[in-house]
Image (cartoon, rainbow, N blue to C red):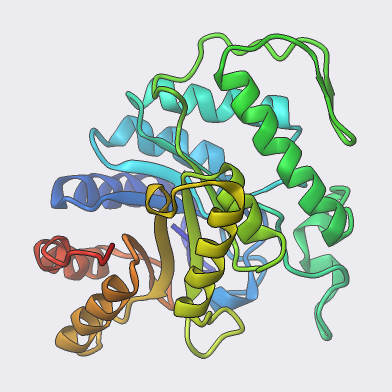
Length: 302
């Protein structure tokens, strides 16, 4: 769920989101995702002013509207919430959804300074006055956030003393319904930091398959790098669910789309997150629903 077009009537947002969530759940989609942004982002093709809901409010709403589909953020930025509050929110949604939440997290925007031509007024951190540390520091914070999540989900109330965060009593009551904890997805394809953190901590990774943008990974190479980090960490590579974000074109060639998913599966991709180049609507979701059975028949390589 990436937001709504400029001019969308506010009164229509809740009913539309409810309809889309219920249809996705009934159609057998495996997961629903929302961005963790406060202003719309350029890759969407929409201006910053386009309507965009807060991610964890959306997940709470989706939890009440669905019964089986997994729910997550693609992905939470470590800069936007204190980790103690963040893990309470993720845990609460896991409890209320019956154990269906995925904790998607990452370092946030892949830059230290705004890209050329982008105004600070149109960047959510500057616009809303959110402190936004350097990329290097955000990676340090990312590791601590995941450590705090696992600490709290173990039920460990002993103090957490990190470089950036100190929690005197990380009480988490009620604790998550999923045991030992909700799946942790660390997103990004950086070879020295992100994929190393995946190998050390994560249950899922997310790579990029978005041709025509700067988010288009050499997936075979990235998976080889991840496997190497797993070997170094003594981690079984097969225990990590490999996911990619990819485009879905409702006017595109259906056979070519399914053939591409087969190619991804042959590389070892387990789970594909579909994003259109425009906001979701009912006809588009119906077209995705038509291929769910075909997609589920594709077996990923191991």
